[in-house]
Length: 230
Image (cartoon, rainbow, N blue to C red; front, top):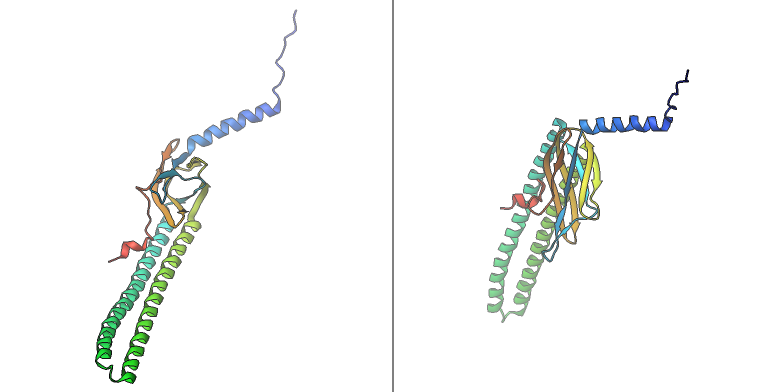
């Protein structure tokens, strides 16, 4: 009568590997992925892949949408207010120019009176300097306002972000194990003096990969001051 041979027990490491694989597969089946490529336009007009570009994933929750809408409203109001100041300063400079033209004409007729001609010239120069200074001050205020409101918007994004990652050397990004839901993809990248900002909505489905390329055709976000130019 022969003895029954039993298989040797599997090593514990192999068992844990099998369990981990099963859990990983189960996790992937419950989540989705986001991937895409980033293309940037150079000053020469050439389009290249954007390497090491930061990508932020933001959940489209009611809390975020409320904060985002409030930030946009503040941005609109503050930019319009600052633009009104620039327009007023530009109008004052225009009126000053017309006044100075009249003063120069008067100087021509007052050459016989050197003191009067000198006084009119000095007054015209002082008015011109003051008008230019006020215009520069208003323009600087507009730039500061835009920067402050854009930073406030980025702070809202940071408060509600769920993931941050970067593109590889080929300008490709891939984020796995993303819970199904509605999101925004945010990215800001500067090429020399050209600042590129993307803010695009996406939907992530279970066990699916959502692809979103960031290109020149979908660049832009709500905090662009040119939206309020008259």
